Amino acid sequence: MAKMKSIYVCQECGSQRARWEGRCSECGTWNSLVEEKQVSSTPVSQGRGWALGQTQKGETLKTVKLSDTITETQKQRVSTGFSELDRVLGGGLVHGSYILVGGDPGIGKSTLLLQMAGGVADHNQNVLYVSAEESVHQTAIRAQRLGVRSNNVEIVSESLLENILELAKTKKPSVLVIDSIQTVYMSEIQSAPGSVSQVRECAGHLMSLAKNMGMTIFLVGHVTKEGNIAGPRVLEHMVDTVLSFEGDHHHQFRLLRAIKNRFGATNELGVFQMQNQGLTEVSNPSEFFLEDRQSSSIGSSVFAAMEGTRPLLCEIQALAINSSMANPRRTSLGYDYNRVHMILAILDKFLNLNSSHSDVFINVVGGLKVSEPAADLAVAAAILSSSINKALPSSICFFGEIGLTGEVRAANFALERAREASKLGFTHIVLPDSNKKHLNQELKENSAKFSYIKSMNDLRQLLGGNTPQKHRNRTMESAEH
Ligand code: TYD
Ligand code: MG
Image (cartoon, rainbow, N blue to C red; front, side, top):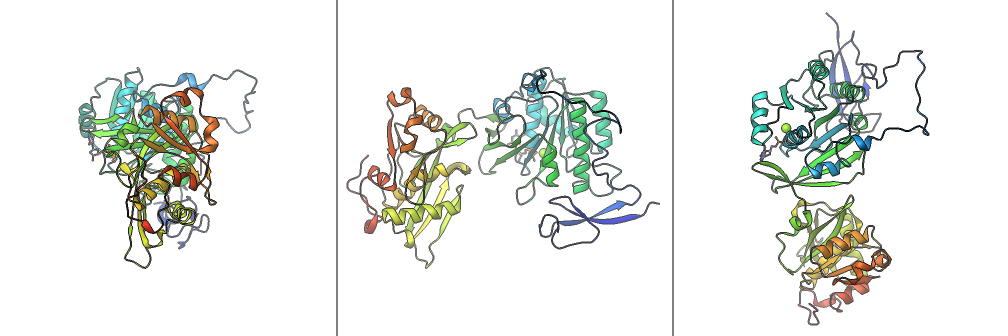
């Protein structure tokens, strides 16, 4: 019998050590080394088993001159039946692409891919859905309940990768779904499914299948408790596209983001809703995120955000109240905590907000996460509104970054943001002065009012002309509605 040997593999970077270490000396991560059993006669192949090219040693390699006509991958895109998913992928599925879909358990990855299989099948493409987590029966019942009844879709339950590869080579589907990469395994590797060696080797073999046979492969990936896709980073390097399916279990909506995409823009966002009949697309997310908004409530402002190439309006709420603690609390949900501190300091300095005795809470409504600095102005307006106890008019919308000297800096995509805001009926748009030149004539001529601001002082004047100073928590008299 072959001798079993223990090696220790870093779950973060995939490097191997003969001995356990508390901290990976390769990537510096603590507690990431996990013991894996290996048969000494069959060492883990380091890429040899699944190399991309199929050339023999000594063979002359073919090169491509850039002056030659190269058939565009763009033309071979297939619609997935979900325009939201198509957009996130950069305009549909590219033949032979290798896609990883990550997300929390129960968020809807399997549902999304089953429905996608149905959509692709409607475009006369064969799909093979391999479930290594659920039985064929279970998956098939679910697929039928989701309305997928095409004979172009086949479902199989298998977790041994060699069998899956064999089946894929005989069936030759256009799209292969592996649900999930952490539950499939190769028999020649001794470590458990989901371990770095297994994930790397299985993903490698599937990559050569995708590239050599022009098959589009979707991998479902689990995420760790930190929110990263479990397994080595090498998995993310190997695939063409990494999609992250996010959402809050307490909310119906689900966001699909492209984190990496070799065939399109990253940061694209697709919005879905989880309902009884599965996922449905939300084609107008701004309306969706502003649905529950009360007109003109204290501490609420609307921010015209950009998610990838698409504008999205969302509500930002702030609550500033007198604190009974020596160190007042600052809590931020959905917006960068450090930026909230920065904005408070700027408001203190330039508008005498005097926030050092207030607890300040910020929340981006609907569980959205806003990472753009352009949200500064909306956050500042919400904080001001709460501090002075005066609601902002319901038809006002903000975007712009605030600098440390109290200046308001230009945001990108000003035209798209303003256009979306006016489309949704916002008649007063507050934006940085330096964005004035980016708006077109057509927009300037429509009924919306544009307030171009340069500094915090302009914001103060716009919101009523008074400073919060000593009169915090009092309604402002010169309130302009
Ligand atoms: P699932 O696709 O199994 O999640 P994942 O593969 O990411 O683990 O989704 C499971 C959740 O979705 C489950 O908690 C119930 C919910 N769901 C619905 O609300 N409606 C539906 O039609 C389906 C299929 C699932
Ligand atoms: Mg699943």
